[in-house]
Image 1 (spheres, rainbow, N blue to C red):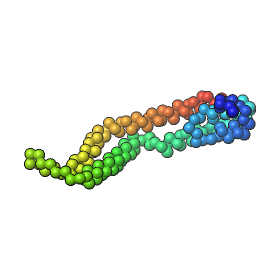
Image 2: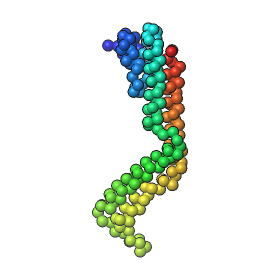
Image 3: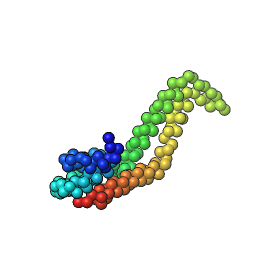
Length: 164
């Protein structure tokens, strides 16, 4: 059993190498690049290799576009909806937990505090971070830009390391 994947790929026949090279849903593209270069060295059909190379690049672009919006306004809108949804869900859970615990009654300076008051106050504190939503939007946009940079580097790697 070979532990080095490059050695095991060198022993594969051209059809199996082409099958590996033409996979479009791989996370690690190193074996694909290596298989493509081996096929090129073995003088496999150049047109087929070029077509698969373009399909591979197109699949990376498509996966990125499916996962991320590239418009900043869309990113902000998506992020706002996610934040409000999850914070509302968390507030409901917190409210439900504190509302249903054993009865608490406290009178401080003629202010009556019970389970309902505590539940409402703690439930509302979940929404305080929404005051910094603009900064949170900037982080979401930065995350998309970093993902775009990774995608561009991956495509550049494919274009530069494949010899055809």
